[in-house]
Length: 213
Image 1 (cartoon, rainbow, N blue to C red):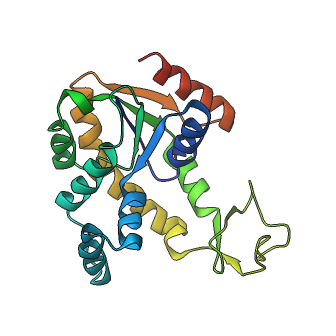
Image 2: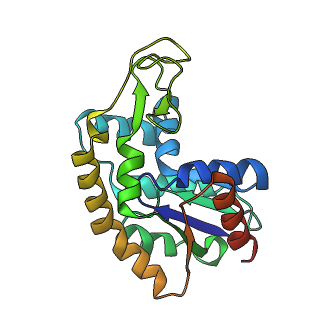
């Protein structure tokens, strides 16, 4: 069965999906990760996607769905598949429904985090320009300010993590994803879990909701 894990940028869905996959044996499927894999391997889909991205354009819903279908081909009907980052719009949600009963969306689990908390989380993020390691100004700072613990590179705030940029990203998320959540709510599939609190506590709540399905 497919579980769509959704939430605003900074809600922690990626972290929780990784934990659930590692500890519970669920399969985490990210269309972004799968697309990058195709590009790296130089598959036909990867070559097409790479040329699109080089032009600075967005990969079409059609290509994303092809990538997703390939990922799901290796999943057994009894597997619990966590979809991270898909669907992002109504058209993608409707196309996902076309997979039929063999790959039916069982639930949409939404991590709820207040907007002010999301801005604080994202604007506090710092990234190493050398190796890409991620830190947080208050929750997980590097040992030496501005210096990466892993490679010694410079740790700084990305332009899109500045508070004003974060606010724009959240507005875009609400406009694009709110209709998707409503689409599934009308089907009675939406489950909400608070994304505020200790990581382990949120994990237990998510595990309980998914385990009860």
